Image (cartoon, rainbow, N blue to C red; front, top):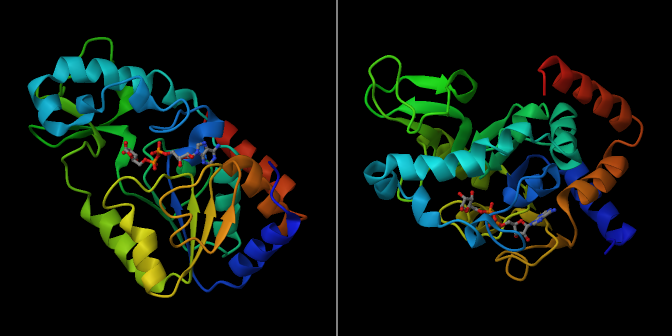
Length: 268
Ligand code: APR
């Protein structure tokens, strides 16, 4: 389905005139990068038992949990590249049209696309942390051939530094998200069901504080018929590419190339 030009232009005008826009992104923004979502069509939780990502289960069955974690998050994620949705958000940041990104994703694609003001509500799969001494590692420096991986410093159990079910949200992204609900006059929701607490509260709190809500999703979410003011019914990559062409018509291709150059430098 294609979104009518009038709705896109309306959304672009709101984004252009906004004082402080926060993007609130979920797994859907990375689907066009080849990373499956958790729920809905092709959802990971239809194929894997989400219990494996509960912290208590992980602590009792680290080897079993790590086998699935490696399959889901490391065998595939690592090769994923940002798609136009990530790239346009990075361009919006460069052009001063985006204050910050609050992402539920752990795939590092916002950073790979060149975004800097990124707050990861559920952490990041790139880092592993030792549960005994707290030493952190980049996953690329650790072999996942023997599971569970152990700390080379103290022999302790290594855990991906992302939030498991039953764990607290780290204070930095939590504070940044709640601050965003007070200072944002626009929330751009991209690719999330709005199923998971407390991330799903952010758009509702911002709405209560007077923010306008723009949402991009091919399917309705918990936000669409409750708080969304402008619903762009479409895929993130396609829709953001169209928005990008309206927001900054001339420069996107050059910057797109410069971002691709940037990705090549970083060996993506
Ligand atoms: N573009 C935009 N949105 C898409 C696309 C796409 N190409 N494809 C799917 N979607 C939408 C789906 O319609 C759905 O609303 O992305 C959403 C994916 O939903 P979830 O998988 O539930 O993702 P999310 O809301 O981010 O999940 C929240 O749940 O399991 C936990 O920690 C995990 O961060 C995750 C949290």
